[in-house]
Length: 253
Image 1: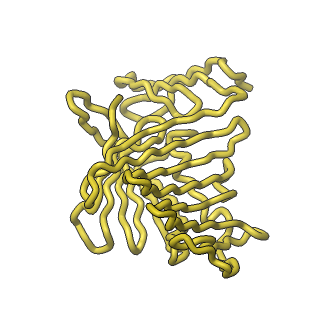
Image 2 (image 1 turned 90 degrees about the vertical axis):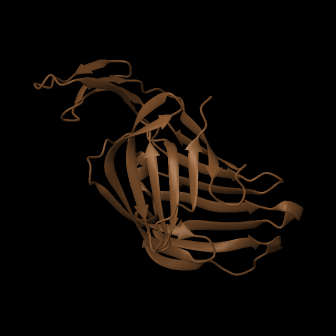
Image 3 (image 1 turned 120 degrees about the vertical axis):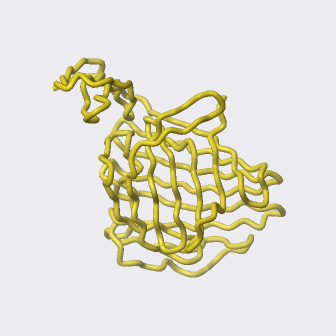
């Protein structure tokens, strides 16, 4: 059994050009031809592993907005994934998802903070393995209605694709079928597909990324992820449209 900080060596016989990657808590040397792991250094420890990416929002009315994505993996495997859109002038949108290492949903909420306190909050929860959701606040008014039960398991509303390149290295064509929550409307089906590697250019820098498509009846989202599974670019397409509705681009520091 490997201990934190120990070294394991795997050999690939093709001797292709290799590249350094980081997959979550591991640093790996990957065969460029067969995508096989050749060398792994475990960096596990009793601390949170947090990654943060800030992207500039383009394409919709307010081009001054930013989105900050924060992923934290606990030593015992739980993940929190927070997407925070900031449009300025006290107008923000925050999605918080917490799931187990088996992609079982533990917590999911959406909070829309608007000027003058006209805030909205939607939450989901799991009761006896079944997903439920409700609007707790809408446009600054408390909502007294009860929870709406949906016959979906906790696993079906988790997101196994969020573990890609954090703990799992998928192969091109791999898919995750799940259900995503849409505030005010409930759940809809979503298919997440790894489309393969793709090179992005940021100024004078070229970065190898992993291209992922998230498809649902109302939205197609194309995401380019780095070697730890964090977004560097996101493109949003409305249902039936081939035009980019919104593009988020990584802000280099």
